[in-house]
Length: 328
Image (cartoon, rainbow, N blue to C red; front, side):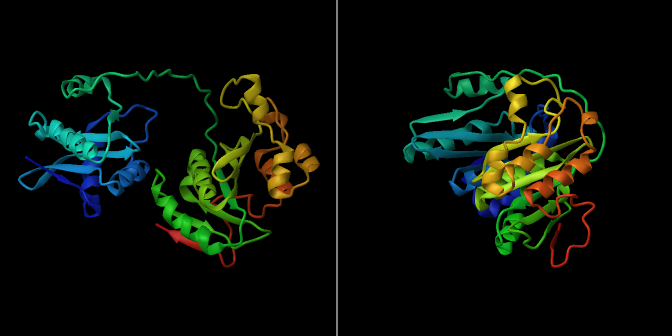
């Protein structure tokens, strides 16, 4: 058994081990264990020189990822193939991390352990510091209608948006089939994506990552053909959010219901929209039946903000002159 440092040349090996691990394990229902969702953290460990492989006869049979923040080190993931377990590979990988990070100034090493692995880590000298608790929440079932939406970046720099989409979308879970980047219009560039149509949470996630890089971004769309949501971000931070039926997915505290009503002043400050028009158009209600049809409401809000092309998603996008298509 040999332990060696991982490098950028080991990405294929790392991915193969990761996917083998996930095929053997039952993930908790809230966890996204896809390679795409976890690749950024593993990239971080590779960049920090914190990935080690265990090899048997030249074949990788396990890995560990870790990184250092000031004087505190953290193990992200540890996996050993079933055939190599009880061979000492897991302990050797952890020892390699300890020696490496201690030499680089680490004073403590942290990790999150499931209940099955507690005994293993305790034998290596770790002690329990805290516990994570889980509460399964009742979530109201919603309609099976189609979801779709678009992201609008407040810039005329088409090349910057295209570059960001090329880099960020492949990291989203769900294996997007393609994206569309529309040319600037009215100070905004619209982005449409396959996986963001299928999963509204991915629309929000991509909007946040674009906002981290490019500033003011607005994601807007229809969810399950029943409700309209928009999320306004600045510098990666949500500054306003609107959901046409705030309790559509279940009861909320009164303060949260109020928070999901559009803030006309914030919208006006960042988009130039008339706050009075926003207040009149972006109404909320206790049920979708008390509001205009979702598509009609979407179009009215987009017009009030001054967005073009917000009335559709990627799947039903019309021909847009000079748009950039990104296929995968």
